[in-house]
Amino acid sequence: MEKIKYDLVERKNPVQLPVDLPFGKYFTDHVFEMDYSTGKGWHNPIIKKLENLSLHPGTMYLHYGQGVFDGLKAFKNEEDEVVIFRLKKHIERLNNSSRKICIPEVNPEFVFQAVVELISIERDWIPSKFGESLYIRPFVFGTEPFLGVHPSATYKLIVLLSPVGPYYPEGFKPVRILVQDDYVRAVRKGLGDCKTPANYAASLLAAEVAKKKGFTQVLWLDGVEQKYIEEVGTMNIFIQFKNEIATPKLSGSILPGVTRDSVIHILKDWGMNINERLISIQEVIDEYKKGNVTGVFGTGTAAVISSVGWLNFKGFEMTFNGGNPGELDLKLFKELTSIHYGKMEDRYGWLTHVEKKEIEV
Ligand SMILES: *Cc1c(COP(=O)(O)O)cnc(C)c1O
Image (tube, rainbow, N blue to C red; front, side):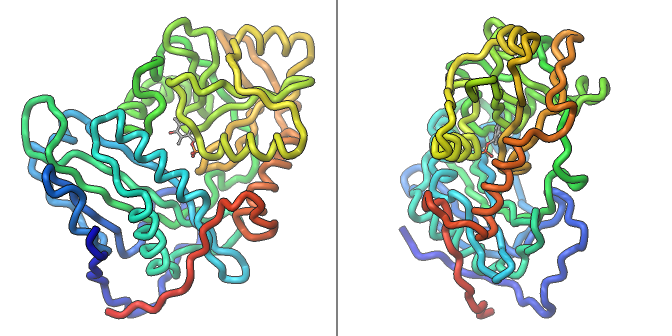
């Protein structure tokens, strides 16, 4: 692979971060980009100014949706140290998503280095207050101008960075979730386990309907029988039963969340009985009625841990911990954020440290 080229902007002033950072609205100065074409493979890696793209209206991605993305975070702590959380795992997942959509995989070690390099250049853009971070969005899409369905002959990878505030600015407040059985998100052997735009397009209408009814999100049921719980819009779900914590097993239609994986590691470490298995919505209701469901929470990079206060299925409402955050949810949130912000040893080797780098323009 060639060396990364640099075409950096001159920064006259220190970076001024907005005080109340919303999620996903601000972007840093630079992106990493790389192109693919059949025959040449991945080439032209460059860190350059963030600019609008110029695309041919026939760009295949715009018509046939051949694209994948991922999402991860870098954190800066009080000691001005910068770390990226589980970068290797996220690049692996990007490649797994690509494989299913006929997108050529990237060299994981090369992209790993490119992301570290980009972040060291954009270090000043990383906010350091608790709850704030730098959201990293790598994505790949088919760029061939062609009308007709076949895998694109050319692709672009871009890594875009966005300094973000906490996902829930109002703090750790439990969310209200509608169990959805009028629509399905994905089916087994489909694309549900890929981070590909189609899945999010498929989720919009159901989410809007739920919002109008006063819910924050929807919990999807399996696409075949609408019997087993799968996941929430952008989070995996965990049910805390009296003697067990359970999360839906990766059946092929569920996104294999990296936070999900991290939480499973931690719970096992704590000696808890955590199982990945089929969980029917009826089981949750039956156990709830017996008083055996002590909490429900979601996991995802954006919110880290999200307490679920209410689950509503066909008008039957279940309330957990009186609508307050559960003890375990808070404990997990504290554990993960302590790892993120260097308050606790990185005992799993999840962090990549990013050193300071002087920019030469
Ligand atoms: C990204 C995502 C998740 C969470 O994955 P993380 O790796 O933990 O951020 C869960 N479900 C869906 C549908 C997602 O897109």
